[in-house]
Length: 244
Image 1 (spheres, rainbow, N blue to C red):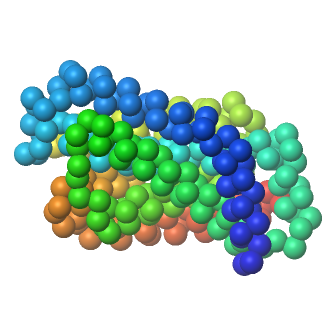
Image 2 (cartoon, one colour):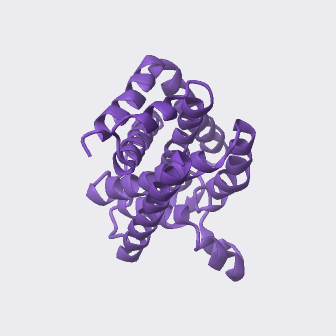
Protein backbone atom coordinates (compact mmCIF):
# COMPACT_ATOMS: atom_id res chain seq x y z
CA UNK A 1 0.00 0.00 0.00
CA UNK A 2 2.93 2.38 0.47
CA UNK A 3 2.90 3.04 -3.28
CA UNK A 4 -0.39 4.97 -3.00
CA UNK A 5 1.47 8.09 -1.90
CA UNK A 6 3.57 8.12 -5.08
CA UNK A 7 0.41 8.02 -7.21
CA UNK A 8 -1.25 10.68 -5.06
CA UNK A 9 1.84 12.91 -5.03
CA UNK A 10 2.11 12.77 -8.81
CA UNK A 11 -1.46 14.04 -9.20
CA UNK A 12 -0.94 16.76 -6.60
CA UNK A 13 2.26 17.97 -8.26
CA UNK A 14 0.37 18.21 -11.56
CA UNK A 15 -2.41 20.13 -9.79
CA UNK A 16 0.10 22.47 -8.13
CA UNK A 17 1.82 23.20 -11.43
CA UNK A 18 -1.41 24.59 -12.89
CA UNK A 19 -3.03 25.62 -9.62
CA UNK A 20 -3.98 29.17 -10.66
CA UNK A 21 -5.70 27.92 -13.83
CA UNK A 22 -7.47 25.19 -11.87
CA UNK A 23 -8.74 27.63 -9.24
CA UNK A 24 -9.98 30.00 -11.94
CA UNK A 25 -11.68 27.11 -13.75
CA UNK A 26 -13.29 25.83 -10.55
CA UNK A 27 -14.56 29.32 -9.70
CA UNK A 28 -16.10 30.29 -13.04
CA UNK A 29 -19.21 28.08 -13.09
CA UNK A 30 -20.22 28.59 -9.42
CA UNK A 31 -19.68 32.33 -9.79
CA UNK A 32 -21.89 32.46 -12.87
CA UNK A 33 -24.63 30.52 -11.09
CA UNK A 34 -24.40 32.74 -8.03
CA UNK A 35 -24.49 35.94 -10.07
CA UNK A 36 -27.28 34.76 -12.39
CA UNK A 37 -29.51 33.22 -9.75
CA UNK A 38 -28.44 35.70 -7.10
CA UNK A 39 -29.65 38.69 -9.07
CA UNK A 40 -32.56 36.86 -10.70
CA UNK A 41 -34.06 35.40 -7.51
CA UNK A 42 -31.62 36.03 -4.67
CA UNK A 43 -33.29 36.62 -1.34
CA UNK A 44 -36.76 37.24 -2.72
CA UNK A 45 -37.53 33.57 -3.36
CA UNK A 46 -37.98 31.26 -0.37
CA UNK A 47 -37.25 27.53 -0.77
CA UNK A 48 -37.61 25.17 2.20
CA UNK A 49 -37.73 28.14 4.59
CA UNK A 50 -34.45 29.54 3.24
CA UNK A 51 -33.56 32.07 0.60
CA UNK A 52 -32.82 30.62 -2.79
CA UNK A 53 -29.14 31.54 -2.50
CA UNK A 54 -28.92 29.61 0.78
CA UNK A 55 -30.63 26.69 -0.94
CA UNK A 56 -28.32 26.97 -3.95
CA UNK A 57 -24.95 26.95 -2.17
CA UNK A 58 -25.18 23.34 -0.86
CA UNK A 59 -26.36 22.21 -4.29
CA UNK A 60 -23.36 23.84 -5.93
CA UNK A 61 -21.12 22.18 -3.34
CA UNK A 62 -22.59 18.75 -4.14
CA UNK A 63 -22.37 19.30 -7.89
CA UNK A 64 -18.83 20.70 -7.83
CA UNK A 65 -17.51 17.94 -5.56
CA UNK A 66 -18.92 15.44 -8.04
CA UNK A 67 -17.60 17.05 -11.24
CA UNK A 68 -14.15 17.85 -9.86
CA UNK A 69 -13.72 14.37 -8.38
CA UNK A 70 -14.78 12.81 -11.67
CA UNK A 71 -12.36 15.10 -13.53
CA UNK A 72 -9.51 12.88 -12.32
CA UNK A 73 -10.52 10.57 -15.18
CA UNK A 74 -9.17 13.15 -17.62
CA UNK A 75 -5.78 13.18 -15.90
CA UNK A 76 -5.66 9.38 -15.96
CA UNK A 77 -6.52 9.33 -19.66
CA UNK A 78 -3.74 11.78 -20.46
CA UNK A 79 -1.34 9.63 -18.47
CA UNK A 80 -2.47 6.52 -20.35
CA UNK A 81 -2.81 7.78 -23.92
CA UNK A 82 -0.04 10.40 -24.18
CA UNK A 83 2.53 10.08 -21.41
CA UNK A 84 2.19 6.30 -21.04
CA UNK A 85 2.53 6.71 -17.27
CA UNK A 86 0.10 3.85 -16.71
CA UNK A 87 2.54 1.52 -18.45
CA UNK A 88 5.19 2.61 -15.97
CA UNK A 89 2.80 1.86 -13.12
CA UNK A 90 2.29 -1.57 -14.64
CA UNK A 91 6.03 -2.23 -14.63
CA UNK A 92 6.50 -0.87 -11.10
CA UNK A 93 5.95 -2.99 -7.98
CA UNK A 94 2.66 -1.18 -7.38
CA UNK A 95 -0.50 -2.96 -6.27
CA UNK A 96 -3.90 -2.24 -7.74
CA UNK A 97 -5.07 -1.17 -4.29
CA UNK A 98 -2.27 1.39 -4.02
CA UNK A 99 -2.96 2.79 -7.52
CA UNK A 100 -6.70 3.14 -7.03
CA UNK A 101 -6.29 4.58 -3.52
CA UNK A 102 -3.86 7.23 -4.78
CA UNK A 103 -6.12 8.28 -7.65
CA UNK A 104 -9.25 8.36 -5.46
CA UNK A 105 -7.50 10.50 -2.84
CA UNK A 106 -6.36 12.86 -5.61
CA UNK A 107 -9.97 13.17 -6.79
CA UNK A 108 -11.14 13.87 -3.24
CA UNK A 109 -8.47 16.57 -2.89
CA UNK A 110 -9.64 18.26 -6.09
CA UNK A 111 -13.22 18.12 -4.83
CA UNK A 112 -12.35 19.66 -1.46
CA UNK A 113 -10.45 22.46 -3.19
CA UNK A 114 -13.46 23.28 -5.36
CA UNK A 115 -15.75 23.26 -2.33
CA UNK A 116 -13.49 25.71 -0.47
CA UNK A 117 -13.63 28.02 -3.49
CA UNK A 118 -17.45 27.91 -3.49
CA UNK A 119 -17.60 28.64 0.24
CA UNK A 120 -15.30 31.62 -0.25
CA UNK A 121 -17.53 32.90 -3.06
CA UNK A 122 -20.59 32.44 -0.85
CA UNK A 123 -19.03 34.76 1.73
CA UNK A 124 -18.83 37.46 -0.94
CA UNK A 125 -22.60 37.09 -1.39
CA UNK A 126 -23.14 37.22 2.36
CA UNK A 127 -24.18 33.56 2.72
CA UNK A 128 -22.89 31.73 5.79
CA UNK A 129 -24.21 28.27 6.58
CA UNK A 130 -23.27 25.52 9.04
CA UNK A 131 -20.15 23.74 7.83
CA UNK A 132 -20.05 20.95 10.38
CA UNK A 133 -18.72 17.38 10.50
CA UNK A 134 -21.72 15.90 8.66
CA UNK A 135 -21.36 18.53 5.94
CA UNK A 136 -17.74 17.59 5.22
CA UNK A 137 -18.38 13.86 5.60
CA UNK A 138 -21.05 13.95 2.90
CA UNK A 139 -18.69 15.84 0.59
CA UNK A 140 -15.84 13.37 1.12
CA UNK A 141 -18.05 10.33 0.52
CA UNK A 142 -19.58 11.95 -2.55
CA UNK A 143 -16.11 12.73 -3.89
CA UNK A 144 -14.98 9.18 -3.16
CA UNK A 145 -17.86 7.76 -5.21
CA UNK A 146 -17.12 9.82 -8.29
CA UNK A 147 -13.34 9.51 -7.98
CA UNK A 148 -13.70 5.72 -7.94
CA UNK A 149 -16.18 5.95 -10.83
CA UNK A 150 -13.66 8.10 -12.69
CA UNK A 151 -11.01 5.39 -12.35
CA UNK A 152 -13.53 2.83 -13.66
CA UNK A 153 -14.41 4.96 -16.66
CA UNK A 154 -10.76 5.80 -17.38
CA UNK A 155 -9.96 2.10 -17.56
CA UNK A 156 -12.83 1.43 -19.97
CA UNK A 157 -12.68 4.30 -22.47
CA UNK A 158 -10.45 4.08 -25.52
CA UNK A 159 -10.19 7.80 -26.30
CA UNK A 160 -11.03 11.28 -25.05
CA UNK A 161 -14.12 11.24 -27.26
CA UNK A 162 -15.46 8.31 -25.25
CA UNK A 163 -14.71 10.23 -22.06
CA UNK A 164 -16.72 13.22 -23.31
CA UNK A 165 -19.67 10.96 -24.10
CA UNK A 166 -19.69 9.56 -20.57
CA UNK A 167 -19.54 13.06 -19.11
CA UNK A 168 -22.33 14.37 -21.35
CA UNK A 169 -24.70 11.44 -20.83
CA UNK A 170 -24.09 10.65 -17.15
CA UNK A 171 -22.37 13.43 -15.22
CA UNK A 172 -24.04 16.49 -16.77
CA UNK A 173 -27.65 15.23 -16.45
CA UNK A 174 -26.96 14.17 -12.86
CA UNK A 175 -25.50 17.61 -12.10
CA UNK A 176 -28.74 19.35 -13.05
CA UNK A 177 -31.27 16.74 -11.91
CA UNK A 178 -29.78 15.67 -8.58
CA UNK A 179 -31.55 18.28 -6.47
CA UNK A 180 -28.83 20.87 -6.91
CA UNK A 181 -30.89 23.75 -8.33
CA UNK A 182 -34.44 22.92 -7.28
CA UNK A 183 -36.24 20.81 -4.65
CA UNK A 184 -37.17 17.41 -5.99
CA UNK A 185 -40.55 17.43 -4.24
CA UNK A 186 -41.79 19.74 -6.98
CA UNK A 187 -41.23 17.05 -9.59
CA UNK A 188 -43.77 14.35 -10.53
CA UNK A 189 -43.76 11.37 -8.16
CA UNK A 190 -42.41 8.97 -10.77
CA UNK A 191 -39.57 11.35 -11.62
CA UNK A 192 -38.80 11.75 -7.91
CA UNK A 193 -38.42 7.99 -7.57
CA UNK A 194 -36.07 7.82 -10.55
CA UNK A 195 -33.97 10.73 -9.34
CA UNK A 196 -33.89 9.14 -5.90
CA UNK A 197 -31.66 6.45 -7.41
CA UNK A 198 -28.92 8.97 -8.20
CA UNK A 199 -26.06 9.21 -5.69
CA UNK A 200 -25.85 12.97 -6.17
CA UNK A 201 -29.46 13.28 -5.00
CA UNK A 202 -28.60 11.76 -1.63
CA UNK A 203 -25.36 13.73 -1.41
CA UNK A 204 -27.17 17.00 -2.08
CA UNK A 205 -29.81 16.17 0.55
CA UNK A 206 -27.19 15.32 3.17
CA UNK A 207 -25.06 18.36 2.41
CA UNK A 208 -28.05 20.70 2.39
CA UNK A 209 -29.56 19.33 5.62
CA UNK A 210 -26.27 19.56 7.50
CA UNK A 211 -25.54 23.04 6.17
CA UNK A 212 -28.96 24.15 7.44
CA UNK A 213 -28.07 22.86 10.90
CA UNK A 214 -30.44 19.89 10.68
CA UNK A 215 -29.66 16.22 11.26
CA UNK A 216 -29.18 14.50 7.88
CA UNK A 217 -30.85 11.20 7.14
CA UNK A 218 -28.33 8.46 8.15
CA UNK A 219 -29.62 6.31 5.29
CA UNK A 220 -28.08 8.74 2.81
CA UNK A 221 -24.64 8.23 4.31
CA UNK A 222 -25.03 4.45 4.43
CA UNK A 223 -26.17 4.35 0.81
CA UNK A 224 -23.40 6.65 -0.38
CA UNK A 225 -20.70 4.77 1.56
CA UNK A 226 -21.93 1.45 0.18
CA UNK A 227 -21.96 2.78 -3.37
CA UNK A 228 -18.48 4.21 -2.89
CA UNK A 229 -17.18 0.78 -1.82
CA UNK A 230 -18.84 -0.86 -4.84
CA UNK A 231 -17.20 1.58 -7.28
CA UNK A 232 -13.86 1.28 -5.48
CA UNK A 233 -13.76 -2.50 -5.85
CA UNK A 234 -14.98 -2.20 -9.44
CA UNK A 235 -12.03 0.14 -10.05
CA UNK A 236 -9.66 -2.46 -8.60
CA UNK A 237 -11.03 -5.08 -10.96
CA UNK A 238 -10.92 -2.84 -14.03
CA UNK A 239 -7.35 -1.69 -13.30
CA UNK A 240 -6.37 -5.35 -13.09
CA UNK A 241 -8.03 -6.04 -16.45
CA UNK A 242 -6.37 -2.97 -18.00
CA UNK A 243 -2.99 -4.34 -16.95
CA UNK A 244 -3.76 -7.53 -18.84
